[in-house]
Length: 227
Image (cartoon, rainbow, N blue to C red):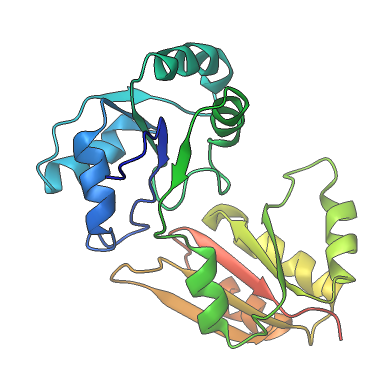
């Protein structure tokens, strides 16, 4: 761990394959006083795999507002915490922003370790332009969804979205509708896992491919920007 005193470590965790974690991440998880976990059961499997016995505390979207003040107060007493999400980098479509902001505002040191995130491998392996891109996370489920799709259809940079398996077919249909049948699209699912799959083609081809399948796993959609 670093010589300077870091109050909060943001620690990326594997998005599938448990080997996709850095030696430094394991060192931090072993040495902090407390691990703030989105789901302690999920993180517990990772910790058990690497024989890490550090205590965990639940920190998720439903309790983060009530936890921040207390956690910052404890960090001011020189406790060190690690924040992890279920998979990938904390704060990327996962809880983290509120605590990081409060920690920074309190003048305490925050350190983010490099590591796993789903959007980068999905973008790179798509074959779509990676020099300029915009990450939008999950689309609105209802209110504002069509407005967002219309806006993104005019975006000239490559667009990256996260999606759940039960909404993928609907979203691909809307991409055909708003972006056009011929817009290049790449869909990756189950990244780093045994059933990892990427399908790239026109929006119409990718929609037809997944319309015929039962879809499981977390999804990343990469869309070519408007020419």
